[in-house]
Image 1 (cartoon, rainbow, N blue to C red):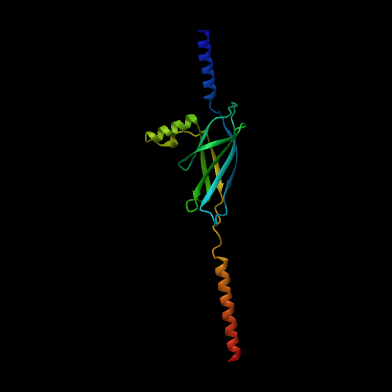
Image 2: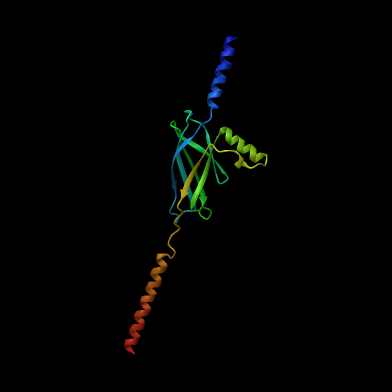
Amino acid sequence: MNKIVLACALAGAISAAFAETCQKPEIAASSYVTQDATVLTSVAFTMQFVLKCSNGVKGISLYADVEGKTLPAVRLSAENKYQISWTEDIKKARSGDYYIKLYDEEKYAAVRKAIRNGEDPDSVNALAMVVLNSPGVYLGPWVNSEFLAAFLATLVSYTAFSAKYKLLA
């Protein structure tokens, strides 16, 4: 009997420890965005961040919402280092700020419930928000160098032949 009570108490303590939420989150983030898209079809976005909680919670599962797309945040280390990555088509990728909302398990479940019930998912407060700034992508020069070389060769040839015929005339 005592073993059953002890097992129930231990299971309750473990579940309470895992259900602990992050209080007053602080985030230190860095990001990378593909900038040269001359031969690519998609732009890659990567955000790495370290999550520090005032209550010392570590190892929680996080989810990210990037403009309506839900993505899992991958935990990279035991020090609460996470990464979020996604790609977008070059035509849809834009320059400027991307606001990334971070949710823990509990808040993410509330977001899914709000979507399922037809409510506004923005009514659920995010655990934290991170901003990724994209400077935009380079799509190549306005004029290809082959076209420019052919144009200049034609121009030089025309002026040379014009000058020759003026001298001979």
